[in-house]
Image (cartoon, rainbow, N blue to C red; front, side):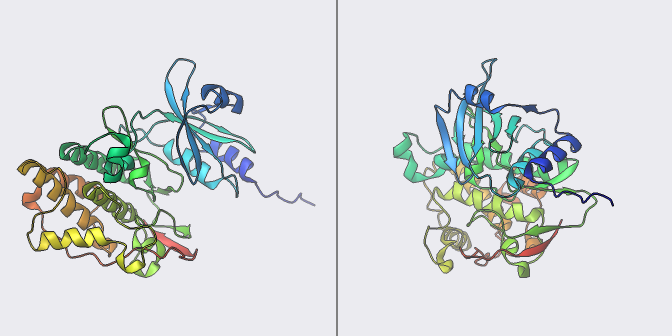
Length: 345
């Protein structure tokens, strides 16, 4: 009698992916090495639902950011996703993964160090006084939005396999010492082979306020690279507004207040009412970012531009841009059920 096949656990699954998907070039660290490079986790850089990020040093003196995953439930899918997807990338606008630690009780990712941390702390007006910094300036905000768009264009079109990020938001955009942004956190990413037309997605994924409507409700259309386009649009609107697009605890009818408010300003050809617009150049960059982002958050995915078009629109300026229709309210309920849905790519 043939032996019964053994169901792979998370550890076995990762080892298989590691060997078969060409990730063996990545440096694999022991937990002792992780502890040593972080000086026993002395300096915490940030934290989130995934765990903590610590500042570290490699033996050659290079600074790194070490992400320690605290949630080890399930089969380690998020960890496998992140290592598998980001190891396929090589782009100046994508954060660089240097290595990892994986065994049954400890999981860590070693990334290049981004000195200025996440974008979200630099675009929220409430943080200016707390962190002793001022508005980044419209030239910088415009360049950040363009670079993020170029990074997403690469993920969607420039890799051998298309990578859908599914969690684009200011917190997952990291800045180096020169405020050059890079896309990070690929824990929710999906890899799609170029010749595949559909893949399965179990449950909505992403962050409330940035999730495209079709991701949490199949009636809005198929899930595709246009779902990342929506998240990008909401991210740029937060950059423009200097505040959250949604208010924690708000009911569903008022969550996208800022996108609707700014759209009305454009329709009525009123002043934008934004901070730190000092000259006509600032005004044009702000309007360009707003109009492009409003196209990105159109409720129907087919009405959103692809990221290649977004890059072209940002570069082209406001002269060739028309104000899009007002996007319908489309944020998910905070109690959206987990469902299985087909994803069209």
